[in-house]
Image (cartoon, rainbow, N blue to C red; front, side, top):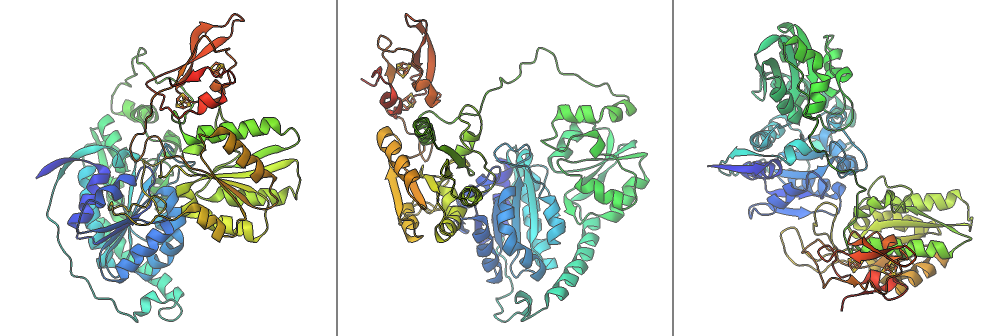
Length: 597
Ligand code: SF4
Ligand code: SF4
């Protein structure tokens, strides 16, 4: 049977067919849907773990227990998971263990770009890279065979181009696997007490040699002969793009990208006039080919950052196109481009209300400057105009630690009030230890934990605070207020962010508190788990003075009307299709010109 599948769905299907029994992950674009699809299979235990390190620990435990396990995350999550992953790469596995790491090329939903392939070298483990949905399914199943045969975890790397594109996939049957039973005193999993780490290191290098021999033989690395004046080595989604632009060239298509198949590369290079590498991000393949002493071009023809669009490829490969007698096709000048806009929070989003309250507080605090260390979530959009609220946002849970460090740096300077701004999911992921650290080390900061009852940025996944598991089962949720108190925070304020005056007062008191204080504004995300919409508000144009207060909220539903006041100020209006009826703007209008009646 054949079905059209998203690359991420195909990976889940591949894991199902390979007989995987345990699936764990943490949401992150572009990987999130893999776990959501895995959660639909009754045969697979699946969970959103509290963070990627814990997910990795669970997957390792499942592998030791003798079943096939998959662990799923985005590139930034791999940094979190790397601590337990590094040793297990040297120790080996029991049941097959596959780590899917999806790189957000172009940083569509990430603070940075990262090339996971470099981790494969660091971890000394094999890497497979599919270039379409069929390969995504097939390579997942193959990864388990490689894992068990070579006694190693295996990397399956995708990028947005594969994760989020659709393709036809041939379905197979699930194969249950019989794996070695758990051996309680197996020496390989007990460094120092068992196999010495230096021996493990040696073993990892010997394993790489055997893996390289496999890479030279496997059919997922293949030569496609064409015009031998130009030979292109490529993999993953760049292969699809360059194949479309230069179908007549010769290709070495790599699906097994670490360790590289040196003999195959040499065979290909010897039979083409000029050798090129087409890859996204770092010159990972190119540098290794150069280290083999071969002449190759790649990095000098393209930029490091962002996805390799066809347009960028045509520019970069202009000289190759000429060599093959092809004309450079320019896009038609009349092609409409996207309008440049600031990224915006949704109408009625709780972060809009909290940011507005902080701005108002700042206006009233002439002697103190509020400095906010941000974190990773929708509220990271507050780093840019028009909000300009956050001074940094670099890693999950890091805002609280950064705020603590900043407060130490200014050494009690009362001219500054230091805030950390974090969401509920991120707090549970990595914010708790940082909060404990700040309390224990007697910091003086205010932590805003904006609780929108979901992991909104990645598409509304559940977490330990929502009371629903990935499988849809209900469990008692953890309470962030109680966690903060248990961590030693003495000043905790829970507020409804749509209640402007109370939010303002809670923030004021928290900032005045000498020590660590926490403000928790709670309002469900307007988009997840279901779209929330109340009766829309409207502006009574007769009363509107055009003061602009409501526009300073930056709610996308509030727009400038065509009507002007006698003094020539433009009045406000509300788009009824966008307004979700949160009521916040009605509370801040000084002349009560906003109503829902
Ligand atoms: S805050 Fe009120 S008076 Fe001011 S522009 Fe908005 S609707 Fe008009
Ligand atoms: S009530 Fe006001 S602030 Fe809330 S969504 Fe509607 S326009 Fe925006």
